[in-house]
Length: 98
Image 1 (cartoon, rainbow, N blue to C red):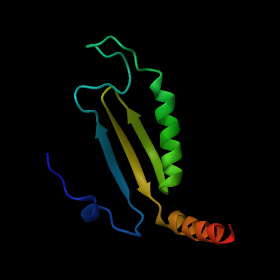
Image 2 (image 1 turned 90 degrees about the vertical axis):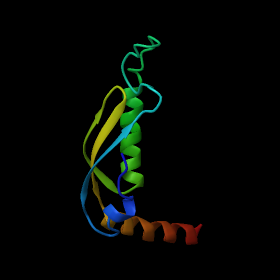
Image 3 (image 1 turned 30 degrees about the vertical axis):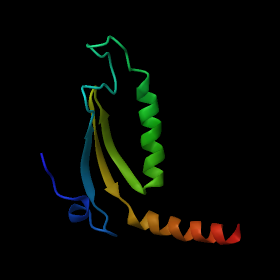
Image 4 (image 1 turned 120 degrees about the vertical axis):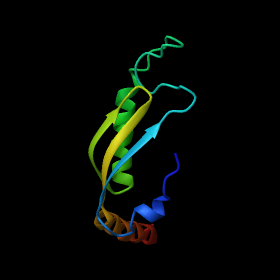
């Protein structure tokens, strides 16, 4: 199903909330027991949660809620351009001083 380009949906510099999702391809599994192979991927949950926390800080978004299912994941995200602006200035000062 085709969707609109992110640049047409997400406005630069505006705080907004979005429901995002990502699906696995080729019947791969994120979590739980894969019925095709019998392999249990339950140990990945902690890795995904750590990755969500890390990326929320790097990309200046607030994670309102998330759900990681067997073959796809959902996130409720709020953009935070105010945090991104503050960090951009701090990074430039750090680079100049290095």
